[in-house]
Image 1 (tube, rainbow, N blue to C red):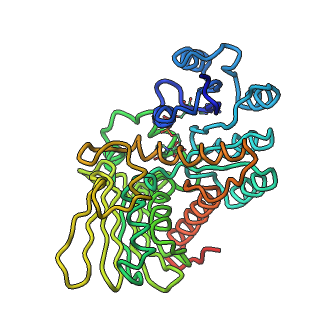
Image 2: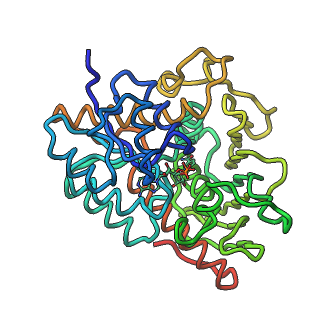
Length: 381
Ligand SMILES: NC(=O)c1ccc[n+]([C@@H]2O[C@H](COP(=O)([O-])OP(=O)(O)OC[C@H]3O[C@@H](n4cnc5c(N)ncnc54)[C@H](O)[C@@H]3O)[C@@H](O)[C@H]2O)c1
């Protein structure tokens, strides 16, 4: 039987990073099929990638504008597009597909400016189109578990948050004898491709999104520092945030933290207990009720509700990972697409939306404004 939901991809040629993760995650779902793409502006790479996935030659497009126009005109055109290009192109590509009437799933950070993000929100809402944003860490089962526990009051009122995303893959940027950058390092550290921030947008937005998702708390204002080490954009940043209940959080993101790979770690403290989750050990949550010994909650055990547990794909003890986290975002997004196609209500599905993308862009701008102006408090509006 033919797959019911057709998608296309912009970016993500065979040698690129995250496009392949999206394709593999979508392959967890029997409903989705890749049928079109503009995987690279380099003709040979574009063609080769299309051939790898068995695409018809006339559906491998030389540019995204041609792709949006042609796919919108086909009776069997794509239902949604996945955007996995560097940050600079997210806005024009997303806008182009929305205007062609095609649902969008876009990488983060959503775009360069708050005005652009508001524009994407406005167009998608006006046209009744779905807009997903790839904040994948919220897709882990244990992220759902923490969200439920916090909503149920298991740790009480939130009094403090401590969260970090530490990497070391740009350490060579600090080395004057370095022999050069990798391809993905080049665009990430170039403001014309990356935007006004590097690691704040690249990984700081994951912290912002993750804490907002599990706690439901909004950030009122931020105070920050960023360290550029003589480069155009920062490789390290510290942020103090104030939430809408008056509590404070301390966030740190770094790409020059020796010994760290993808060290997203989130600790939420309430007046009745605390929760801790570490992305590199994503199957467990550490729960400490006040005055009691810490407990380790494993995916797949009785402590996990049926609703959160349903996001797991294999029995606990067999480690799941980032592919499944992405696949969980897509399962919810595809449920929403299916609902749209059937004329049903498509609201309420559990995937990061354009609103969260907009929050991320606002966060980046407030952090940069604070850091570049003597670490003053900056309100987020
Ligand atoms: N959600 C996550 O956890 C996560 C992880 C990594 C990267 N990202 C985001 O994904 C995006 C891509 O990052 P990456 O590391 O995969 O980069 P990459 O450099 O590996 O890949 C970029 C791809 O975009 C293509 N491209 C560039 N301009 C294009 C255009 N105009 N038309 C068609 N294709 C074009 C390139 O040819 C390449 O295939 C970035 O926005 C990044 O922030 C998110």
